[in-house]
Amino acid sequence: EYTKLGFVYIGEMLESSGGATKAISYYKRALNETAEMHTAAMAAYRLAKYYVMNDKKEEASKYIMKIVNAKPEYFMEDLSTSMNMMYRFGDDEEYETAAAIAKSITDAMSKDDDEHENLMKERAMWLTHTEDKQKALEALNDYIKQYQYGTYEEMIEVAKDGLFFDTNDGNFTQKLQEYNSLIEDYKNDTIGDRAIYEKGKLLLENAMYAEVLDFKESVLSLDEDIYPDINSILKNAAIGVMKIALKDKKCQEVLDISKNYNITLSNEWDDGVYECSFVGANFELAKTIAQRNLSSKDIELRKKWLFRYIKVDFETGNYENIIDASKELITLIEEDKNSSYKEVYRILFDAYQRLGNMDKLLDAILKIQKVFGQDYKDIERYIELMSLGNKNKDDNLVIKYGEEVMKIQNDSSSYAQSPYVEFTLYQTYLNLEELEKALNIIKSLDTVELSNRDRSRQKYLLGTIYSKLWRELDADKAYDASIKADPTSAWAKLATSAKEI
Image (tube, rainbow, N blue to C red):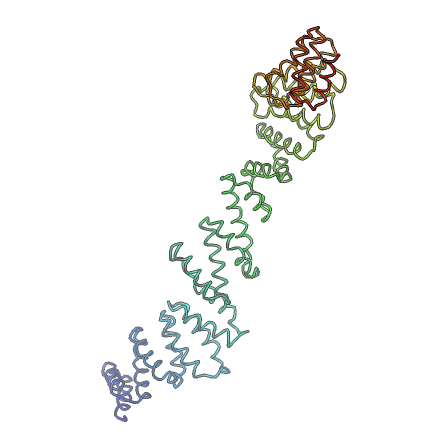
C-alpha cells in the first residue's frame, strides 16, 4: 500500500514540475491498484482537482463521485480546496456534483460550524436545478428542519413552493395530471397547497369555469396571505359559468351564481341578466338592472329599459310608479304603430284598475282599442268595464263592452266569459225594455256549453222573456228545459212556479 501511496506523491511532484500527463497516469495507477480507501480518495481527489483546473468538469465529476460514494469525509482534509471545487461545479451548472460535495462536507461538520447553514442552503438550491425534484425537496425540507428560523428560510420556502412549478413545459392534460399527483402526494405540505393554486389557475386559463367552482373548497382552504388572488380566481370562474348559463338561458343557474358570488356583470350582459331575474322572480335584481339603463342617451335603449322597468314595478305592485313611467314611454312610442312596447297601454290600464282609479279606465281602454283593435287579450279588461258599468248603473257602459266581449268570443269560438257576460247583458237589455235584444242574448247561450245549474238559469230566463213577449208555448218549453237541466236548483223551482201561474 505504501507503493500505491507513493504513486500519489510521485504524481504530485510531477504535476508541480510540469509533468501533468505523467502525473495523471500515476494518480490513476494509485486509484486503480490500491485497496485502501484513503489512498483511493487521495488519488481521486487529485484527479478531480486537475480536471477542474483544466475545465474538464465531466471528467472531474466522475472522480468526485467516487470520493462521495467511498470516503465522503475526505473533503474535510483540504476544506478550502474542496469548497473551491464545489463552487466551480456550481458555477458550471454541474449541480449534482456541487450538491454531493456540499452534503459530504455538512455530514462531516457540526451544526455549529460557521459554514454549515450556508452549505445546507447551497446544496438544496443546487438540487432544485436538477431533474431529481424529490431529492431537492428532501434537501429543502432538511434545511427547514434544521434551521426553522434560519437566515435563508424565505429563500428556501420560495424554492420549495416553486420546485415543481418552474416550467411552462407540457400540455394542459399533462400539467393537470401533475398537479393532481402533487395534491395527492403532498396533502399536508406547501407543495400540495401550491399545486391546488396552480390547478385552479390552469383550469381558469383554459375556460374550465365549472371545474374551478367544483374545486372551490380546496382553493378556499389556501392561506390568503400567501395566495391573495384566490377569491379573484373563484369570482372570475363564476363569471365565466354565469355567462355560459346566460347564453344557454339557464336562468336559475344565473340567479344562483349572481347571489352566491355577488356578481354584477358589465352592461353588455344586462339583457340576459334582466330576463333571467324577471323570469326567476328576482325583481330586485331586475329593477336594479333596468334602473341603471334608464338614463341612456340612446332613445331605443331608453324605451326598452323603461318598458322593462314598468314591467318590474307592475309585478311588485308599485302601481303609482307605473303611471308616470308609462306616460313617458307612451309619449316616446305613440307615433310608432309597430312599437315593441305597445303592451304598456295594457299595463297602464291594469295599474289604474289595481289602484281603483276607475275614472281613468275609459281613457285607457280607448287607447288600447285604438292600438290593438279588438283583441282577445283584452277581453277581461272589457269585463272589468262591464262590471264597473253594472256597479254604477251605467247601462250604456255594460252594453258597449258586453257586446265587444260577445263579438270577440264568437270570432274566436272561445267562451271563457260566458255565461257572465250574457246574463249581465240580458238583465241590462231587460232593464231598458229592449226585449228582442234580451231574447237574442239569452238564446245565444243555447250553443254554449254550461253547467247544469247555469243551463237551468238560462232556460228560466229564456222562459221569462218569452212570457214578456206573449209567447207562452215557447215559455213553457223553456221552463220545462230549466227544470230538466237541474231539478234541484232554485231556477228549476222558479220555472215550476212560473208554469203554475
